[in-house]
Length: 254
Image (tube, rainbow, N blue to C red; front, top):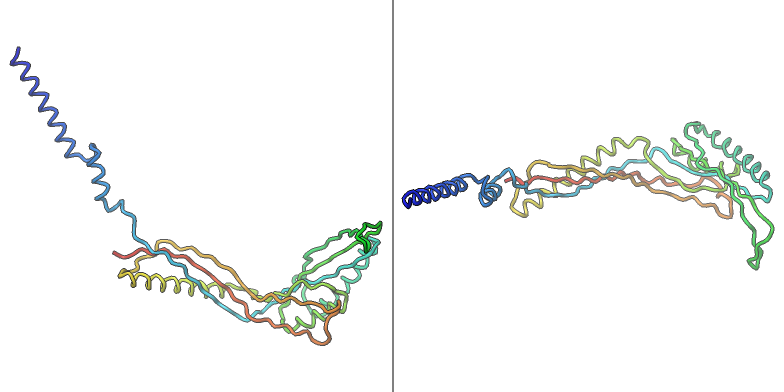
């Protein structure tokens, strides 16, 4: 009986030892082996990258100008305010079209009427009210030499509000392409400069993002005492600029 018991204990000891040896040879079983596999796996390593921003600008002489102008009338009688506004606005439209501005380049921007309650000099509310009627149109001029003339004629015809003059380029596709190439070159130059300073080399592109915006002079035309100045109105178009930004993530070459 004692011999049999000793044989059984020996068998169990050998079995346990075999199990321990098996775990050591299979890293997927033992926790320590699994961690070693992950730390030594190159496929699990994240790449070293460098992220830079680049900017590109492209400018051109404007070939279109957008103007918003209109007529505001005020009267204590709503019907009169509306009628006066329509009469003046029709005269303004006739003056605009006389300069051969096409219908497709004239668009109503805003039409509204609101009521003003009148206060006396002491700040007390009176029974009087005034109706304001405002009609605004957007006009695109494709011959910039007509800009000053259009403003003068529209004001003489009855326009009494000019909200702004914006110069631009009708088709900015070519400017965007030029700005994009410059932005990418700018970003690449920055990446190479940073990498060289660190004793590294720039690798392949991993990610690219683009952000774009356009800027142009916005000129406000104001009237003195409600009247336009005599003669041709001087208008400076300046230049139209497209600004484009990119963000590029480069790999660091090993």
